[in-house]
Image (cartoon, rainbow, N blue to C red):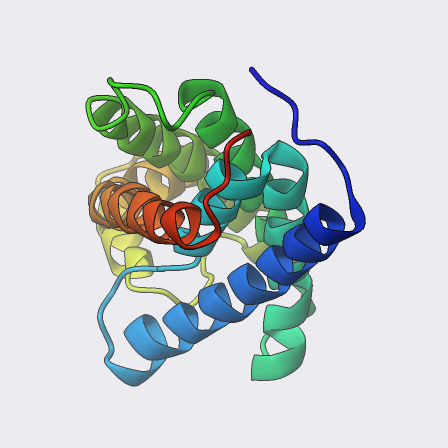
Length: 194
């Protein structure tokens, strides 16, 4: 994988990319689950995009900043910051699967990317929900989880499995839309190296 040559321009571009990605994730999170009441998270589209555009470090920083800012902006429980682990996993998995997003098989890689993101976010999010929120983190997956618990499935298993339907859709959209944002930014800024 080629390294990005650090110059003042590239450092400024990376910083601007992170700021844009955090703002983009915040807007998506306000728009879909809170405003339109669509039961998907939509908090990782720009984490995927900035990871593809600027690398794993900026992707991780984007995910952590988004999750640190979200409870401050919304007034939600500060324990929501634990979900930064999901965002960090999103950046690491995106980087691992899409090491060179400009190669010829990039579109084929979107399927394993979305499935891997789904699996990691279901597991990590389910564990966080179980131990930080006792299984109730005020999202539509709580209803699915309650029905699984009524079938005598342990809380951790129910919290993980309840996220599967939502994350299959959410992470597929994150992979596809994130790649689209990356492709647009890459064409706009004509980035040659990753």
